[in-house]
Image (cartoon, rainbow, N blue to C red; front, top):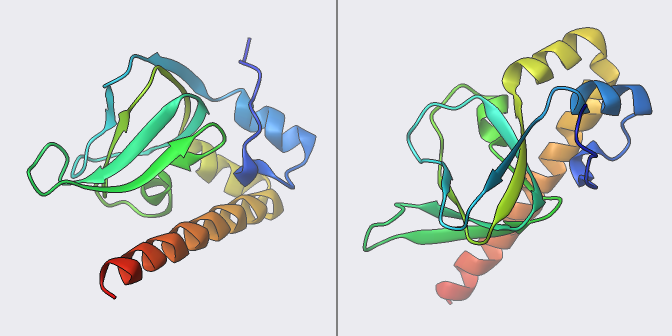
Length: 147
């Protein structure tokens, strides 16, 4: 039986059939605080949804010049870049607290594209909107540091 889905903003606007289809294919993982979930530079093909807890997204993890890019919590997602392009992970993500994540492989998204292109388009648009919001926040932070 699939876990009960938390509210995930990138799924907003998808019909019930699509949500059920996606949710049947998630893998639920419970992680202790401190766990590295994905590592910068490694290959990846999974999108992660934060069900509970708190994670941080870092560049140059565990190095003297480490930079924290984002803090994510329930309803947020990460790993979308590996779904949209086949490049190595762009950052490391670490659980700060005990965290539950739900992950989906890139094949789930490919299958959605094949079976329900309109629903796939809604999902990709939602991801793009969230990425735009994140980029805007990083731009603001960068500008504040250099002004």
